[in-house]
Length: 142
Ligand SMILES: [Zn+2]
Image (cartoon, rainbow, N blue to C red; front, side, top):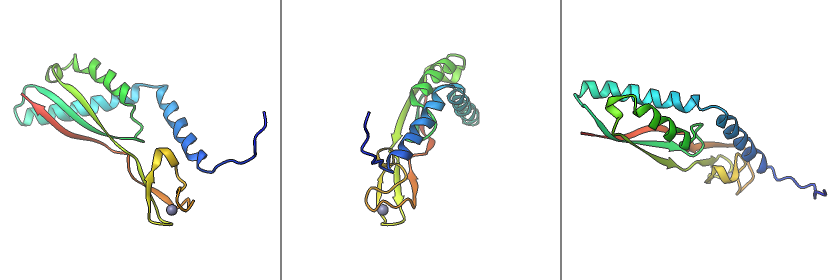
């Protein structure tokens, strides 16, 4: 097979990202740990506020966070059955798109699409503005 020899530098960070995500897929322990962590902290809040049931939990999840959303849902369903507070709780995940800021030209751009190299000026001097978040945004109780 013949290649033209041209390798876009933009390809590299993207494949790095893919690799990171694939590595993650090999273990669900990470997502389960995350779910336990959320439930533990919400249980504490519930006790303090005399809440007996949570009907909905909204999470903000960055696009390039290491947490895989589908695993998160699976783990949530499994763990929710074992905890009374969450037996009726729906998990809602809101994705925050990843944006990168370029020091070279001051532009922001889509991280997943372009990686670490700025598509405007090709500077590698960039940093992630948003997209790595993992926050509990809101909960609904009954
Ligand atoms: Zn730039």
